Length: 207
Image 1: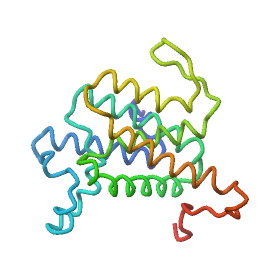
Image 2: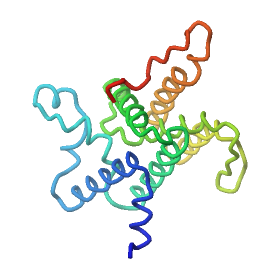
Image 3: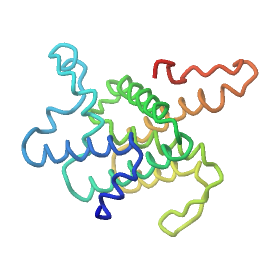
Image 4: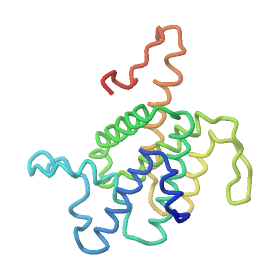
């Protein structure tokens, strides 16, 4: 008889489940000393000159050591990734995987300009932004203090980050920017007369 955690795990849609599993395994590998964070961060020179081709993947999988902060990031990631995959991407697993790939690739292109070695948090913020724009009428409650609709969620979280941290939330802004580009070209531009209905970011036919 499956235990509740096993049932929950297999209820999570495929792409979200694989991503969360990868992040958990990477955190466990660092915690047990099998590897360390210096082997995981993204750096163009190490990738192209040292042929460390795993780094463009592990930069999205490492959310820090096991602990409360890691649990928070995983909850945040799984919640919004799952809602997207079960919502606007329902029955379109490869479309969702393609969206994740495009978002990750965009963040990799931006990372050298902002000196951000780990990109899992910006990618999660991208998912939050896309979900919030595709669910504009859903009311949300933040810490029981005030109610707002979903499109304001990324900005509320951005403001909360500013209050809690002394550093500028560059990663959050990167996620918002990448999410907005995807949302514009997939949800807004194809509806314009000038677009002719073209979707520049649509999933390639071979997928």
